[in-house]
Amino acid sequence: AQSVTQPDIHITVSEGASLELRCNYSYGATPYLFWYVQSPGQGLQLLLKYFSGDTLVQGIKGFEAEFKRSQSSFNLRKPSVHWSDAAEYFCAVGGVPQPNDYKLSFGAGTTVTVRA
Amino acid sequence: DAGITQSPRYKITETGRQVTLMCHQTWSHSYMFWYRQDLGHGLRLIYYSAAADITDKGEVPDGYVVSRSKTENFPLTLESATRSQTSVYFCASRDSLNTEAFFGQGTRLTVV
Image (cartoon, rainbow over all chains, first blue to last red; front, side):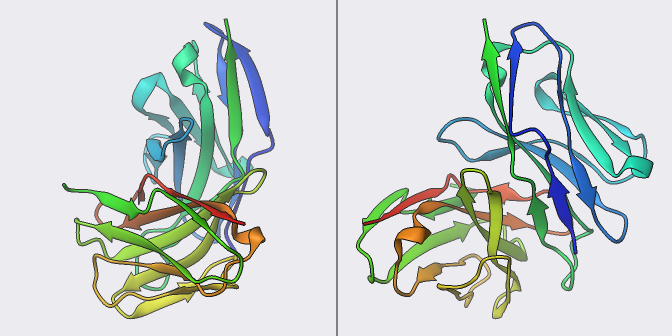
């Protein structure tokens, strides 16, 4: 069974400081991994995704994530946080979409608060 | 407009009533999903569908019914609403070319 664990429910970070959000996954085959962001009252927007190739993936809004197969992790990072990064962040795992295996499973989310 | 739209955006209903949440996508994506979002639980999968007339149960399907007679529509019905079904519901779609899921804006459902 596929699953995602986001160990940190809530993180508070100062504006300009670095941010790292943790994600651990369980998936039987080669996974697709995703990070989504949800601003208050909004839908989910894709930040970045990984399937193969370079294990360091660049996304939108200055975010990056690193895939570590040995640790089953896909942690999200940003070197310098802006107040607009305050949101909820979700990690997700799934396979190559095909009729017998196409669902995405999400973690419980990490809420990021940015203080001035 | 192109994209994935949910209606209504907000709904208040009474316990025991049937309510249907609508989801429509314009991309002809094969795969569609319904999730519910609750504090502390993230997004939990209710039902998903690989194509018209093909649906599967997710993690929390009890009390919900889905249908998919057309590729672009994937309505979710609460047969007899309960207070525990108060939540924010998200519809999403995905295909084999664009591997990520695209989400609607959500429906906030309150059962009183």
